[in-house]
Image (tube, rainbow, N blue to C red):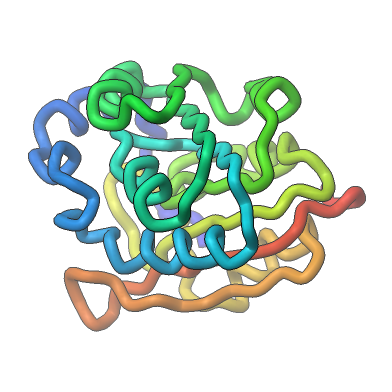
Length: 201
């Protein structure tokens, strides 16, 4: 559902957050997303995916997690925060990180990849369906979105059915797994998995 009164934040806002919040500089196993990332890493490992494209990659913690736990061979991360990309480049020299806008990027056609990952990104983007529209048909995808509002969220989802209704039409074999968050019993992250279809809007 839309978050009433939420203002869209620009790259400068995210730059400041990445500079000022210490948790973005800690090893991935100290992040409050660690349990969520472990599930994603396990799914990538089990599927045998070796090349990851991460849309909205943040400061490189997930990249290190996937290299360590999923056994990937190549990782490309895209983020519109210059600060996030600088941190990611320093924290994960094994990866490749690019500054770019997920709603207008051509990276999907330029970077060979087996799976698209996008964690805690779509809730920040007004044109979230435009982001999904750039995913290539036939590509496996792993996405997460939350059930709670925040200053930078333009929407959140009150149940897995809402997630399936909004994003399911873009994917074949779409599934949604609710995972409990770190900070409260009411906090949930919806982990979505599917294969981008050829007819989603």
